Amino acid sequence: MTDHGNGETPAGGGILSRPDGATIAYHRVEGKGPGVVFLHGYRSDMTGTKALALEALCRARGRPFLRFDAFGHGQSSGDIADGTIGRWAEDAIAVIEALAPGPQVLVGSSLGGWIATLAALRLRRRVVGLVGIAAALDFTEDLVWAELDPAQRRQLLETGAVTLGGEDGDEALSFPRVLIEDGRNHLLLRDYINLSCPVRLLHGQRDRDVPWQTSLRFAEALAADDVAICLVKDGGHRLSRPADLDRLCEIVAPLLDAAAPAA
Image (cartoon, rainbow, N blue to C red; front, side):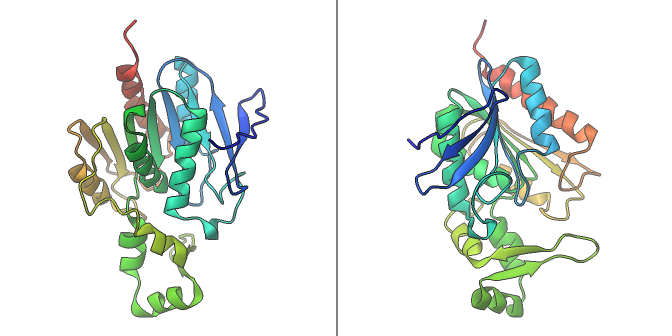
C-alpha cells in the first residue's frame, strides 16, 4: 500500500502519496455504513458544486464521504498534460482502497464517470452503486480522435497535442497524444461491461460535450439489470443547477439506503 503521508487536518483534508512521488489531495468526512466517493471531470477538481452537494447529503445522513483531486488537477501534483486514463484509474483505486473502507457508491462526473467505472471493475464487491453524471466513457476515441480531420490528426501525432473548441464561447481544450493513445487501452463501450451493481446514469440532452446517447450505449453494455437513466431535457454538460443537484442527491440517497445493513 502507498504511504499515506496524510498529515490529515481536523477538517478532513489530507494528502495521499503515490509510489512515484506524486501526491493526491483529498477531503473526507467520517461516518458509518456505506459511503460515497466522488470523482470529478477533466480539468475540474474536488471543490465543485456536485461534490459539495453530495458531501452535504452524506453529512446529513452520517455517511462517509470522500472527494479528491486527480493527478494534474486542483491541489494534487503533476501536469495535466502527463495525465492518462490508466494513471487516473490507478490513482482512484489507490485512494479508495486507502481512504474509503467498506462498501461505497462511486459517483463520477464526465471523465470521472469513466474512471469510476474502471475502478468499479477492479473493486467489484466493494462497489454497491455506480452513478454517472454525463459519464464520458471512451471520450478520447469517440469524441476526440474520431472527430479530428486529417490535418488535426497529423498535428496531434507530430506535435504531441491538439487543441479543440474555442468557438461560440466554448473553452478551448488541449488533448495530449499520450491521453488519446493510452485511452485505447481502457475503452469500455466496445464490449460487455461486467458489473452487477446498481447503476444510475444522469445526462442532459443539451450536453454539447458528451452526447446523451453515450449513456444509452453505457446502459446497453452493462451486465447489470438494475440500471436506470435520467435524461434532463434542458440540461447541459455540468448539471450543476440547484434542481440538478437536488436530482443527483435524490438518485444517490436510495443507493446508500439500499446498501445499508438492516437495523
